View 1 (cartoon, rainbow, N blue to C red):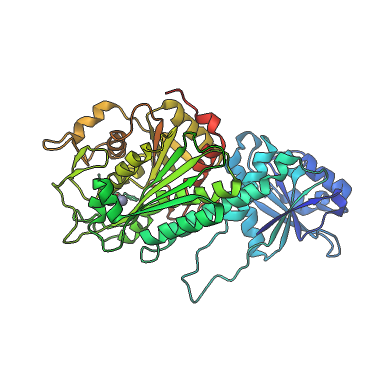
View 2: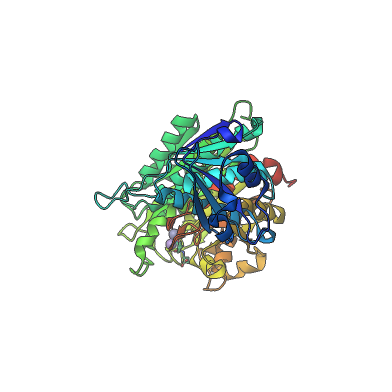
Amino acid sequence: MQFEWQVAPMNQWHGDGILFFGFENSTAPPPSLKRWSEETPTSLLDSYTWKDFRGKPQEIALHYEQAKQLIPRLMLVGLGPEEKFDLDKFRSAMAAAMRKWRDLRLGKMVLPMEALQDLPGDTNRSLEEALVVARTSLHRFDVLKTRDVESLPFPEEILISSESRPDTATSAIPSMAEGIGSGICLARELVVSPSNRVTPTYLARTAQQLAEKHGFKVEIIDFQGAQTLGMGAFTAVAQGSSEPACMVILEHCPPGLENTSPFVYVGKGITFDTGGISIKPSANLEAMKQDMAGAAAVLGAFQCIGKLKIKQRIVGIIPCTENMPDGKAYKPGDVITSLGGLTIEVISTDAEGRMVLCDALTHALQYRPSLIIDLATLTGACIIALGKQVAGVLSNRDALSAAIQSLGSEVGERFWPLPLWDSYFESIKSDVADFKNVGDRSAGAIIGGIFLKQFVPEDVPWAHLDIAGTAWADKDQPTSPKGATGFGVRILVELARHPERVKFTA
Ligand code: BES
Ligand code: MN
Ligand code: ZN
């Protein structure tokens, strides 16, 4: 999929078809379409296509012109009622258009800036969302298929068309959208890939490749190294697996920012979660290949950060290991000393995410971070609390959780806050250690956050994002096919692009 500009008077634009958007029950065509019908010999507005078009959400109407015309097809996409319009509706409409475009096997789609200017809200934002959707909504993972491979080709080009030359900010958008889209697709491929392919070593190699491509610093701490450093909680989980574990550290540091406090992104990288000795039931166990979705989101975000050349120092830390039952595996009742020196009584070896994350969080402090965000498929309880469309945000700063909610909703990632009151600590009190790794069955997602909070000093703004529900879709979504969603990439990129939205006085 290519993005190209086409700057010319409307009647000189060319392409296989042109896209316009319409609101439900609008009495007049949008100004861009009206102009199009005046400037080109289209018969759309007199046709039954137009009379029949209702503008319902994701409704598509196709109008054909004479084959000899520069643009022989016109596609109208419904946005639903204008008063209910938001970027989610727009993204869904754009994705519906992309699917239709692919089904028709068309090549070059004309996307008029004038049509985007008709929409409420910021036109640059609409353009970026349209292009990210174009880049990601048809994504499919078929490298492991040798037969019955879906043969429909993807639309080859979006011609972003305008009568006037785009300004600097607008001209930068196609390559930004390409960067974001490729990061989302990378995260999806990592998550959907099975654990015999995406091992901890594979995640480390992916990080090394990103580092080479974008000039990041990369450090891989192996099991031995982690043990030497004292990462007792991380190695407790890793010791049960014969697949070599590693702690991967990526650093994006634009010249001159070496002495600034970075944002640190921490992602849970359990490449397969059997539960360990507290073994999970076998029904749907294959789903636990997704337990590295936090790590995938961090790697996907770094792909974008590299392409976007973001001016903010950012460190990524991903603890990578399987969680396996084994003669060497850690066991319920074991007391583990974490990197931070705190002792943990293991009640369930299936609460392994917080074990690997706590050492990653402690390690993050070495960088004197101005912000820590961790992402993890941490608890089934988060799915019970918020469902599959919304991730939990648990933070030691209300303003940070509010910023994550609002930045997230602009890019189609929804977050809802859960509390971190100290009174919850009661349920993880231990008789033998500083605390236990699980409480009783209540407030599971919050207890996960309370556990992690023990490792983050009060003066470091931090948010924990529980993406257990949102990392994977069981059915097709408006803007992504079923399977891995790439959730988390976009919020990390938004935070990196808008550091001013998350500058806090400690
Ligand atoms: N990886 C799971 C959580 C999970 C569940 C992710 C479903 C995605 C979909 C995590 O390691 C886990 O096993 N959590 C336990 C926590 C419990 C032992 C406190 C859970 O949710 O049951
Ligand atoms: Mn688990
Ligand atoms: Zn897990």
